[in-house]
Image 1 (spheres, rainbow, N blue to C red):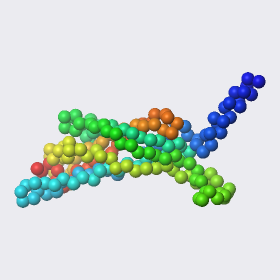
Image 2: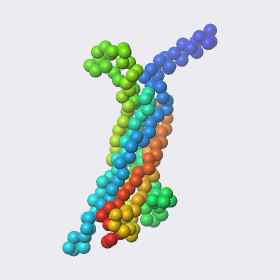
Image 3: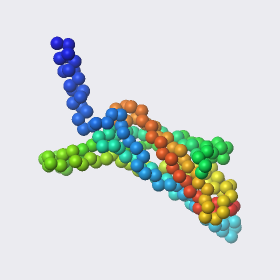
Image 4: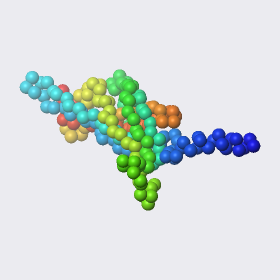
Length: 190
């Protein structure tokens, strides 16, 4: 009798897992578009404009994964050699940044109609999102100005970025992305 009672109590819990097969969330960094710091030539007064293009990170879920909500980002900077940058020259930053990666589930039929059973389970709509990452701080811009490099041989910095949040089952989730940052326009020439 006791085994039957346990089975009856577990049945509703297992039935709730229908669309999802991966708990906790199985998400990954699908792609990274590097950041760029572009130094314009000095004008007649000797003033240089600095233009920036923030990097873009794309996240995606494995098939059957539940979604997740991220709410904070931590960044440490690495030099081209892979060594951590001096905190005096390139201090790390932490900030709140809220974004969601949706669940990767089997699609529902449009307009709630009947679904072609021969196609059932063949297509998965992956949960995905892209975010523009604000890691090109004034310290990063100054690092490029202070680094003496010949024209065309730009110094490279990598932002070691850690994203933290909770998935839809309230499990903590952490993802890491290494985001390259390029300098161009003859940095190091003030």
